[in-house]
Image (cartoon, rainbow over all chains, first blue to last red; front, side, top):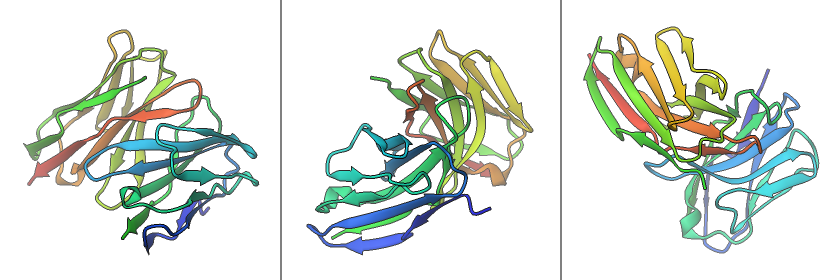
Length: 113
Length: 111
């Protein structure tokens, strides 16, 4: 039971480059989420998806793009990375929008130089 | 816009002490509230999930309460242990499926 995985776990890139962070879950959960966590702070929602082909903006969506062609995958793309996007990115999933818990991946540490 | 505040930001206690972590939120129209634990460099692990219709949930030495009308939740940890040292985050969930997190309380339990 692999659960929810993220790749890569660590990434260093340069300003202006495109970066894609991958998220994969094995539970067929409907809902998936992308958060960023900056040093000393809680998590802020970037984008979320209620089902395949359905995505919506969260609190801080600017500079990010998501897609969800398959239920199990929810990639996050930084179209042109900026230093302010240096952060730890967490993917999460939940069975649906109801009363169940969110399950989190291990995170991707991204450094933009 | 929902805002979630956790007080204190950091807490240091001797082993064996009982302690309370606080979480407050501005919009009481929530679906449920969840407490998470995060160890340094790791992801989040769910501790307790309280539905909006519930007053409290218990798991082992942990007890979480919810007062939706006043916009408050507490996480009570009994007989703290060094292994409880971590950052504790609360998240408020709406019926639209979105979550708003507090900044967390970093707990250190000294042997």
